[in-house]
Amino acid sequence: MIKRRADVAIIGAGPAGIAAAIKAKLLGLETVLIENRDILGGIPLQCIHPGFGIHYFKEDLTGCEFIQRLIDRMYSVGVDLILNAYVHSIEFNSYIEKRVNVITPNGVYKIDTKTIIYATGARERHLFELNIFGDRPDGVYTAGEAQTLMDLYGILPGENIVIIGSGDVGLIMARRFALEGANVKAVIEIMPYPGGLIRNIVQCLRDFNIPLYLSHTVTDIIGSKRVESVKVAKVDENLRPIKSTEFEIPCDTIVIAAGLIPNIELLEKIGVAMDPKTRGPIVNEFLETSIPGIFVAGNALVINDLVDYAAEQGEIAAEGAKIYIENSGIPTKSWIKMTLGRNIRFVVPHYISGERDVILYARVQKPENNVYLSIANLKIKMYSVRPAEMVRIKIPAKTITENHYVTVPVEVIPT
Amino acid sequence: MSNNEIELICIICPIGCSIKVYKVLDNIKIEGALCPRGVNYARQEILDPKRIVMSVVKVKNGDLPVVSVKTDVPIPKKCINEIMRLTALIEVEAPIKIGQVIVKDVCGANLIATREVKKNS
Image 1 (tube, rainbow over the protein chains, first blue to last red):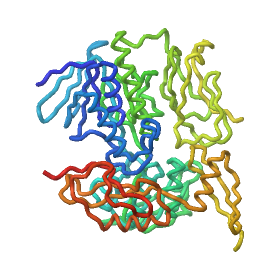
Image 2 (cartoon, chains in turn red, orange; image 1 turned 90 degrees about the vertical axis):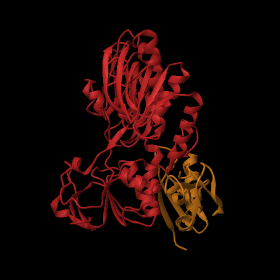
Image 3 (tube, one colour; image 1 turned 180 degrees about the vertical axis):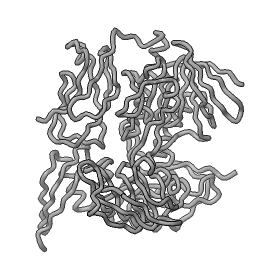
Image 4 (cartoon, rainbow over the protein chains, first blue to last red; image 1 turned 135 degrees about the vertical axis):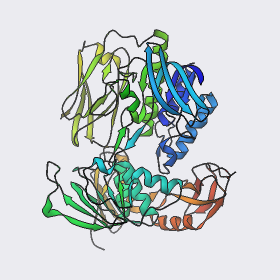
């Protein structure tokens, strides 16, 4: 058994965890970064498309380029790393005493730490969560699996592809399949609007004439050894398939791109309060969870569209850890709750102090044009809001303090 | 030449304006863009659409079997197939550094590596 002490233990060395580690180290904290793979970087390692780092590095990079730069920056500040590390459990012993139990090929680590930043990312939703029935043949992949096969190992998983779900990873893989000479027969989306960003609809589907079926669902997968076809039907307003509209698309490969779910298992085990909307923890403005001194960042907190936001959350959490250690807790008079108003699906953070500027992330429930986003007495004009595009807004502290709010309503108001 | 109407969605910012472009001979009329950047986008898309192209290229003696590549500048859309055929044919020897030029001067761009590949030990 190896014993270690730290100010902050960061779990997960993807964009959020690495950005948190850099920031924590620069703030003078003794930092340990724990990663379960044998390499640093997380998901961007398999992302060969551009769209990364536009805010963080002010440059449009591919995922691999972005993460390599972040890793280089981390090495230049010097962070303690534990690779091949499986975090078995987290213990909360007191306000400033936590323990992370880690199993590695070199033995068991017990890391005694004042704070924890949890940055374990997300997992993909799979077929079984989508209520899609039928055979279970070979040829069904998640978008991330297809991405790993194609872009890390150079293996094309199939030739005639149907993609279920129009999340960004699915759209990006549609383009990759098309570029590599596969035939993408259809992208099937159950909602009446696409799940991914507009630029991906345009550059990944329209560029390659790939049909997008909105308000459609897959009702059946057919195939004995390998996928042979899928049955597709239109859905009604309750998202139930309309039998009479059913048609069949022959294909040999199905790619599931139906969104991501935060990885929160270890936090759930110690009783961290969760938000059923984001499926991640409930947090304050420093991204501290309901258990003091345990912070969360990146896709484990909320599913982000941009890597830049994940990295930003890592930095916010690191600042939180610093303040927490200096004050044995985050000092505040009271926490003000953000409440969800008209056309708001979720808001992160859930509680703010009003004592400092805060970055707020929100998603809407349905697309709308010509609206105001209203937060307390702050009104921000927006030409359009869409569920696929996370809203990120900086709220100045005085917006809240000047008006003595008890709760802060966030809503979308038509003009 | 007949009256040509093309519909575009602007991708410059998250608003995503629906833009209509009317093309009569050499005259282009653009409607629906909320800002001048959208007008420029539409003009570029109609006259000479360009894209960054990304793929993977085979690697000899590397710790990974392929290396990811991209064009260092956007290339004309009509050249995409040419680039893709090229990436399927070539093979590079490890080690490879990020930013290393894999193919020089193709369709007005260089094909550069976007991932490090170490020599297989």
